[in-house]
Length: 326
Image 1 (cartoon, rainbow, N blue to C red):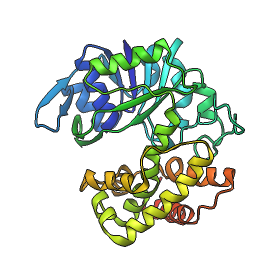
Image 2: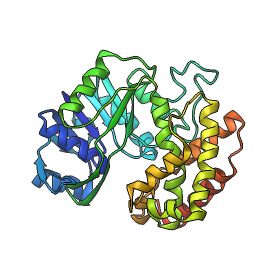
Image 3: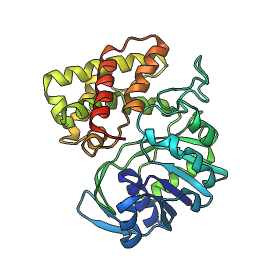
């Protein structure tokens, strides 16, 4: 398959490297020293077991428009970066191109093909001007929940820390031929790629933890295990997650695990820095709007009070203003 990874950073690079090694025609969209290293030396992937491989993509470039039409476009840029690149994605489409949305947080398409009372509602925190939807469209969109932890340890080198699951789902819940083909392609590259007919439930289960652990870590500099083991931050996370659960359940989501099980799962990840903390430490904008702001917005939509979420959202937004010069 012709697959374009838009945002070949830690997660995108991991995906792209393994897909290229499996024989797919992979184009990597990257930039800066990371792109130059890939062009010069290939993309090196270091696995958790200490093994390493070098993948050679079909094309590595910073210019989306030179890549040509693709079978699959996998968006692995951060959520706040999608509006700026969305208009350029048109150059990657043929009539059947799938666009896999692999961002954290609430996706822009959440209320598309939803079928409930909020059908068609636009989530302002994620796509305020409708630019993403106008340039992707619900018909192309494939939902994806990303579970692996990876990092760029130097330009052109991706280190895999843990996990290999990318859960997929059509946004209308059907099991189409195209999503089965996509899942099979990912499996052949060594990933787990289960297809879910309720992808929104899977999104909420991951978001349930992210809405608390990501911003708390960004504010404190603490790892997941530190947050979960310190009584005051564990309780804060519990309060934020309780508010989140109330919103999700109002929207028809049924959680298959308890809140304490979700917290314990995060604690078991260990001394891991969340992506939001890594962004703050690197002086980059965070995904605070898609992960926390969007949940607060859905709280207002469903008339559910979110005092803890609102307070943490405000403080991280201030942190971005003072620590990150955009």
